[in-house]
Length: 256
Image 1 (cartoon, rainbow, N blue to C red):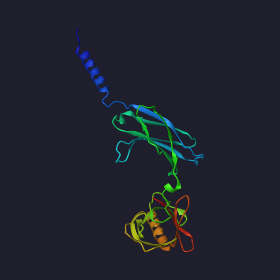
Image 2 (cartoon, rainbow, N blue to C red; image 1 turned 90 degrees about the horizontal axis):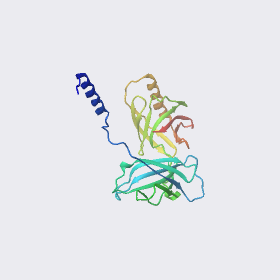
Image 3 (spheres, rainbow, N blue to C red; image 1 turned 135 degrees about the vertical axis):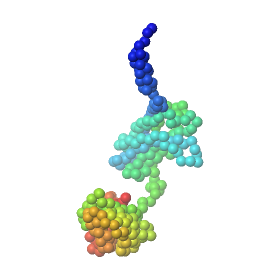
Image 4 (cartoon, helix red, strand yellow; image 1 turned 60 degrees about the horizontal axis):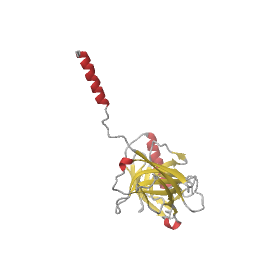
């Protein structure tokens, strides 16, 4: 059979294109699914917004924290709560031990947790019903008392919201040390705390020049600190209000 140079070139080009199209990446993921329900025995309804969380954990090492392979979260509107957990079966190693953990949370607070070990990949079905137990109030860590100690970001000054583009921050340490950035310059000083009263010392700051809006916000903030006599943290929002001697708000800050 006779081939011309052009036909050989076309065949060579086709072979190169086929080779380029051949997969050079690792094998595709091997998806696997576990299903089940989460339930509890107490006759009570969950608060609106409660979340059911299920995790697949590698629990092979008794003296080390478990490793999360996959997790899912579903609404707790219906109990028993059905869940579906998807993961890559290539993450599962035959000689290791795996188990499921379930929790029910509301606004970050733990309400229920699984107390028994729910082992998987032991030859049983991939369908697991998990019973969880209520966490008693004695098991929960005590709520921290409100305090202005912490890291804050200014959200309003003199009753007016401040622009997001100008960040005024302040950190109040447990020993009364104060530091932050007014919007342009860094500053530092001290705060004296006694109950709901608070007094700020004169703040020492750097002397850089910035845009007029940033400088104006910084001056207003530092001048306001000098007039602050009381503090209050709003329930629900967690905002810190710094008040003058007459109880008028000088500024409001949010935790950062």
